[in-house]
Length: 210
Image (cartoon, rainbow, N blue to C red; front, side, top):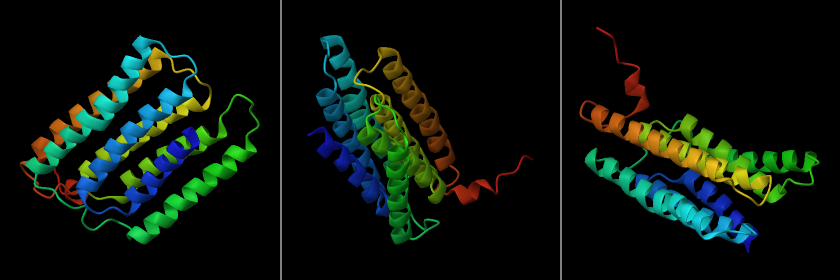
């Protein structure tokens, strides 16, 4: 069952690589949050009530509900509906993400480590590199925020690749990192949206210090 959920998480990466509407990105991030909770819940052999509550808060409440709603608010406030004019065509993006997954599979097979869960390792690295690719290949700053959140999801899965325990300190660090990044970038987007209605990274090159 866990493998099915991990494969579903991989499929969301392919879907995100060809998505054009910003609302699609938000929905995929929300789905990834739910998938992460299901994966962690099934993967952990021993889980106490406190850790379960924390994982529920971090994945379902924060990743699947709060963050998507916050990003959706930013999109509506700045009237952003589409990721217009990406640097590469969607078909090329799909091929690149496929290559990323293929390379991570080859990399995982070359690693000999008994405590490493290969499936988790492949999904984690694929998610991290896909997030980096989304940041590098998209024009709008808000999409860069979403790419960063995809990277965070990959880091989350990577913590499960080396064992079936997830330290509370790692959870807290990831959650605080997400909160700080979304809050800061959200304020940044709100402010820059008052000046640049399009919020295109190309427009940042025209900023000058007078």
